[in-house]
Amino acid sequence: MFDSADLWLLRAVYAGGSGPIWLDVVLLVTFLGSGWMLLGLVPLFFTRMRAGATTLLVTLVATSCVVASAKALAGRVRPCHALAFANALPIELPTDPSFPSGHAAGSFAFAAFVFAVHRRAGLAFAGLAILVALSRVALGVHYPSDVVAGAFLGGVFGWMGARRLSAVRLTDADSEPVRQ
Image (cartoon, rainbow, N blue to C red; front, side, top):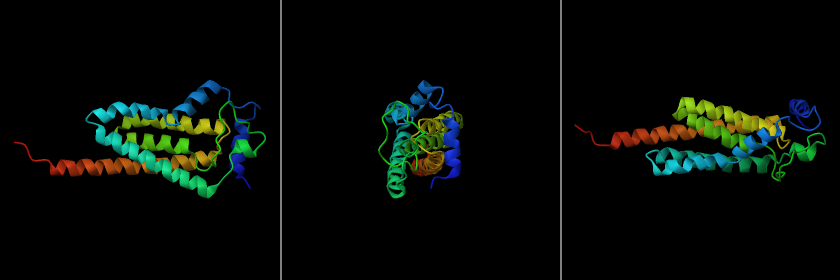
């Protein structure tokens, strides 16, 4: 029924019986992955980076739509609802299906997009995306394969969004008059 690797990894996380050791850090990271990081984009809409911010926002919305559709198709029950040992910690339990992880997909889409535009900043966001994905497993609301699938999906969408931005910038550069 459940993939043996998923169960093995979840049991390893819950070996102590009470969930992850650094609960406050896990809760903060998962909170950031729920979309609150997007508030950092707001100032970019009022600068010359407006096209990039808009493209990133469209990329994240598209990622979210695909994740919601995949969840509806897969219908996988979350570990906190299916496994007695995967006790969800003090968070409001999600009611939607588990597969794929929306937190992981959104975080990796954001990180992949930023990485394609600015490598150094993208590496920092990639580290944060990994922590977000791990926090979802640690909280008992996702199986490891849920976050891997979400990370892959988000990475692909982030890369495609950054490619779209590059294409738009090249088109805009071609249409500008030559200055002498």
